[in-house]
Length: 210
Image (cartoon, rainbow, N blue to C red):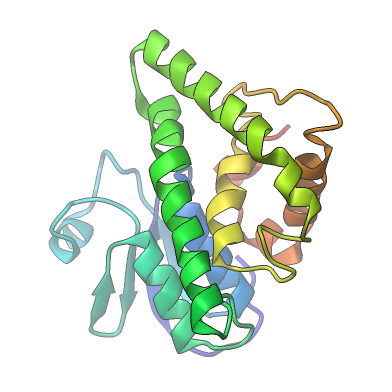
């Protein structure tokens, strides 16, 4: 992965295909942080990673003696540790609103993505894919209001949502091409052409869109 500015030395243990790992990589790219990336098979965790997190899961961010093992905590830590460019609004009210949007993504869409990516039951996968497609189609018009998700600036909310949208094609989820969904397609294009988003992609993630 490219390096914009050498600011710090840290290690990021990442699942190269997981959307939670991807969202943190986007933040690292946005901040231009120097870090060692270690892509690890989540089914074959190294002893080192297993000892770092009580949940034996990825991603894990190691910064000197600090160990973080929850993606949203990592994202906010990086935003505070490297304040430029800011990825959360300055004012408390709008910061709280952004955190609520992240919470909604975590509760409403992330479980559907997890089911599609990992479930063995075909009916469960089909149901989750249908739910995600319908939900995104329903909210698509809101993307006409701002350049990014409910904001004129790129934020941590977009970092959470971009990996989900990038995986739609890979999951076989085809959104209807209509006037209603046009703002969402335009939003996706703005996200995907960002230099930092492209920098955040692993080889496996690039292969998700061929």
